[in-house]
Amino acid sequence: MGDVLKKVPVREQAPKVRATNFDEVCLGYNKEEAMEEASRCLTCKNAKCVQGCPVNINIPAFIKEVKEGNFAEAYKVIGQSASNSFNRVGVYELFRQMMAMSRKLQYRILAEHGKAGNIPFRKVSSLPMQKAKVVFQGVEGAYSFTAMHSFFGESIENYNVETWRDAMEAIKNGDADYAVLPIENSTAGIVADIYDLLVEYHHSIVGEQIIQVDHALMALKNSTLEDIKTVYSHPQALSQCKKFLEEHPEWKAEKYLNTAMAAKKVKEDGDLTQAAIASPYAAQCFGLQILKPHVFSSQQNSTRFIIVSKEEIYQEEAGKISVCFEIPHESGSLYNTLSHFIYNDLNMTKIESRPIPEKKWEYRFFVDFEGNLSDSGVKNALYGISREVNNLRILGNY
Image 1 (cartoon, rainbow, N blue to C red):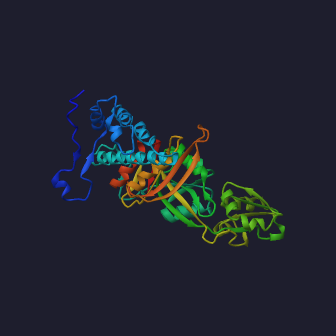
Image 2: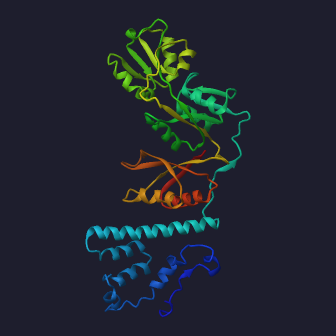
Image 3: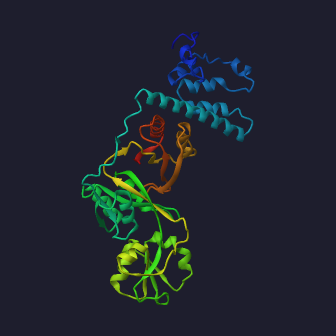
């Protein structure tokens, strides 16, 4: 034990530094300094400090916990003196936030000194396009096909696969450089399977494309609305057209792999009682007539597609970051994690959750926020989050 009469000095900003800012002059103790200062306590049997405390805090018990490095227990000691359970929780929360802010400051200092770890992504001026090959799910006429051409241009080399998993496998095996996948619809919500595939395959999101969705009911040239008995389409499209389908309870709605593939099935089966919900372009591709245009429920119906690559790259002008993580199954975990965005002045734009199959009633969270991986605030936030969650992954910056 050191000299109990010698107080551990509190760190302060240097005079020349504090003359240039309005930040707090006193920087406080770090963990080691606080423990050393607490070790000066004489642990008096008749603690005069408690008698002198206006709110009668058990100061020796508080200092004992600090001395042993148990800071969470230390603030609970202070909370025990609160007048009721509501105030006690308030005291706990106050000190919990003080400790959280202290950690965030430490993370920032570490980041400023290059100690926050390396982000594995490589910055590029533009996505490599020369000799690039793109894979999409479905057939010509699918919305994925339209999104691909909107993002890459009409001349891009491409091919189609039957399922989203097939597209991810193509990227993994090097058969394609990019995949185009639907991740969210403005009416029907997220495409949950894509979120699960992003976790399973360690690919990166390098871009996005939003496509206005215009669903139409289509059938063979000689079909009429009165002939229709079965309507085929992708589950998302059926959901988006739910109101229209409810107006025809005599029809049976059948899920299919893709909207354009549903149109192709109607054409190939040659059955006058079949119809498909797909884009007008799909009707044109497969020689079908449109029995009813604009059958979706919302006039603002759009689908967001992501561009996925095996390469961990991001463009200089990228402005959105997607991450996923798991958190301890305890009170305040999500709140404490998201506070890193507030502290670093980052705007969170989206949060979703998906169940973790191997952990009953526990969830993996997916968060989108504005920023670039080169930004110091982003680096600070990601480092801080990585220290407090499980399995943080940067899904992409685009």
